[in-house]
Amino acid sequence: MLKSNTTVRTPAIERGKTTSKQAGWKNDIPLTIALVVLALLTYVPFVSVIVNSFKDNKQFFTQFWLPTFPLHFDNYSKAWPIISQSILNSVIYSTPTVILVLLVSGLTGYAFARYRFWGREVIFLLMLILIMLPGILLVIPMFVEIKDMGWINTVQGIVFPWTAVQIPFGMFLMRTFFETLPKEYFEAARLDGASELQLFYRIALPLATPAFSTLGILTLLFTWNDLIWPIITLLDSTRYPISIGVLRFSGSFSTDFGVTFAGYVLASVPLIVVFFFTARRFMAGLQGGLSI
Amino acid sequence: MATNSTLTGSVSDASRPRSRLVPVYMPYVFLLPAIVLLLLFRYYPAFSAVFHSFTDWDGTRQANFVGLDQYQALLKDAIFIKSVVNILIYTAARTILTTVMALIGAELVYNLRSYVSQGIWRIIFTIPLVIPSTVVFLVWRQIYNSRLGLLNQFLSAIGLGDQAQPWLGQPNTALAALIMVGFPLVSGLGFLVLLSALQNMPTEVNDAALIDGCTRLRRIFAIDLPSIRGPLALIIILGINAGLQEFTPMLVVTNGGPINATQSPGLYLYQQAFTLGKFGYSTAIGTVLMLMTLVFSVFILRARYKRAHDVEV
Image (cartoon, chains in turn red, cyan):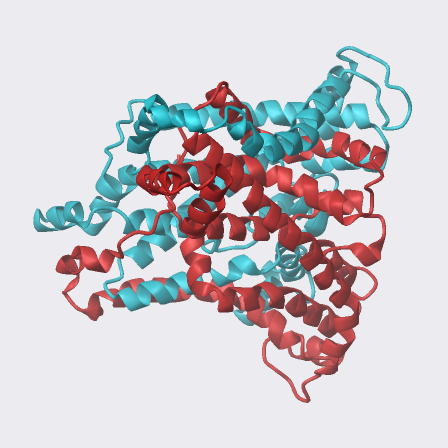
């Protein structure tokens, strides 16, 4: 069976991990060298994009590796109008999707974890098996379905199908999390006269922050990167999200490398900013001990 | 891990008299939004896709039942066969590469003695994860560019200029180039999942092994790998599932070319449906893809649970 642990754990350092780790920092040197090499290989392409985003074509053709002067900040002011609408669109599509995924997965996972009812295990398995479905297969009938609903080119035409993609994994994650909560919390509140709905949003939801951050971040990354569904349902290029918006640079603007690279940098900035403001929660969420 | 014990807890819940207080319909109210969304946007399209793979559907006109004609046409379609071979190579190479590199990265960080460095390296390899994947693909397309690409520029800079070549422009290098996109592939979800699995291992076992004179490399194979079998299997299954239906890198980096050298069933399905309007044919491609995914997933899950006795700690 699939498992996941999103409970907050004792940091390793408090569990006496230091006992085997007192030989000193010198032992870290070979490991650090290997890590530096891997980090260099990872970052050189992106650093090269940033360096070259300040060049005009003449500078780029003559000096590939090093920065050249004057720096062309105007590449950024040229790239911004091309990409800004896409950034806004991505925010418009991603925000409601993340909220809906958290809400619906929370409700579903909570019901599976806290109630016993007719058909519980069957419904759970029927939902879980959807994780295995290749999304690309569903894209064709879903396109026709969305077209019949008149949802082509709309926000809801993106948001609801995206939400449905994330629910099977989300409800599973939330179920395993809610099962770890002590049932005494709920009994105490029930004795105090709380209704079932109150139990959910006054007790379960506030306690579920670690699991919600895992699910929220994975959903955000999915919606930010998904290309196929928007490219099929959105016909109007002013509604394209980032994943399609950056492709404009590879088309008509590809002759100006500096502007293209500036566009790549601008497209990457929003999530990097989100990351720096939420780094701790972001990483705690991503390493919520996923396993099967 | 810590979750299994609570399952029994909910059983005893039900036998308590106070559960009478919960209205019978309550759980179904909680499930309703998920059921509606999944019926509309998962179950219905899935059944519709499989059903229409037996028809000549074009998305607008009434579809006619054609039996197995679409599947027979698939078997005779050299481009489709080529795309299946490509995706099998791509998925195998890509899954092995990403898993091994994520594991190497996680082990390197885990073995650092300083916790501060562990934290810093974790951040360093997390940041690239937030760069939009389309940007990553476009950057790599630029890296492989024959004249102004980073790879060929680098080869010239170290005196190997004669090795420079149009990596994406030749059928014999394009697929390999696509597989290597994102090299060294350390930074990713796999790295974070494996690192946290390693950090959550009970340290006593490692300490005991160390005292017994176990070398680091031997410890990795004898202790670390068996302990993180669950997360490893998860990463491999996710990698295979994503790999088999891969679409975006082919579309953005090579558009399936040159001469279908990087054609994938996912991209082919998209082209057949949305440029040629052959919806029936592409749902047949999708159904084959789904069967492939299921077979591989079952295979991995069986391998993971065969004679596996997970010790709950």
